[in-house]
Image (cartoon, rainbow, N blue to C red; front, side, top):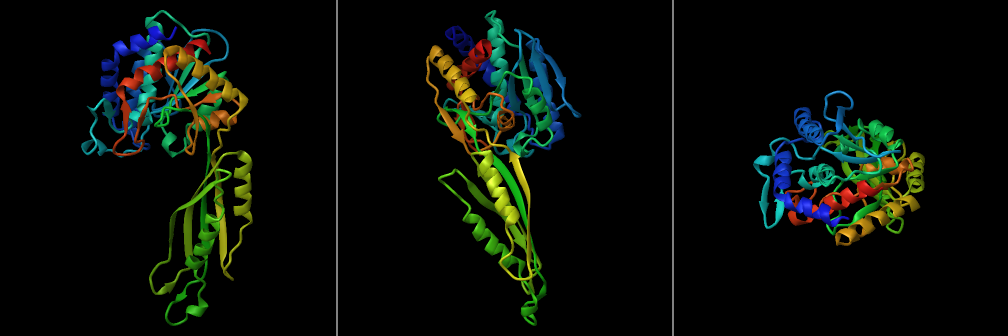
Length: 375
């Protein structure tokens, strides 16, 4: 049943790649309201052409909710984001172009290619006179690259009504689907010492930078590869001048964990941590931004369905865990079966060589079509 879908998509691949190139040519960095709204307008019209009911969620019109009201029961929710990490002007140095069987361009892999796959899958089913068993809902967000602070309530609201969630983030470079993702916690460390003249009265000072160094070494010791826990101090600063004992310092900390229990353990350790240097105080603030997407029996069963659909089409898919977070972390944490990484094959997310593999696109879109048809 999947071969006819694959054939249809292959017959129209040139048109789809032109469409994706036009989408990638709209610069839509997170926070660029004009670019995000321009892209959302293109996506909105594409969904309307497919006969979906579409409306904006929240102010600004950059967040879209589309509904294909076929089938019965709880819907299958498809999630993707239109924002990218590339600031306006990137296209001048990183143009959209095709070479060696790959389409290069900012956001083609992460993840406008995934958004296009949604549209292509629905188009193929409609063209072949086929319909899903359940309603299909599509949510296109505009702030995933910064953790979806505004979109998260909409994601969770729609996911609570869904039977399953399919996330069109890119596949791994090897093409694996993602059945687990680490949780992401973000903390800030603030150190308060006491300033003094470094040459005249250094003994009167209490160096916040020395204390920061103690804390950074302690934080490095929290890394636990056997548990999959990583703790990274990615930013640090302090002091005012070279001849002043620094009174203040701070650092930004990224923590990745496989389970909610591990997230709680790390948060507790940071909350209990005190200063090493006398007369200096330390304060950790922050917490879990993206809860872990933990592989459950329901997620494993959803992957099993995808694997069967892929074999029906004529290829194999594997599963993998990812250290990065996505909007799928939020839906999985609600207990909704979630399968991630259904987007196109490619590589180079957030990099100058970001691309998708053109001849791999039809298989992935056909897989999505069969999933939404049969779930």
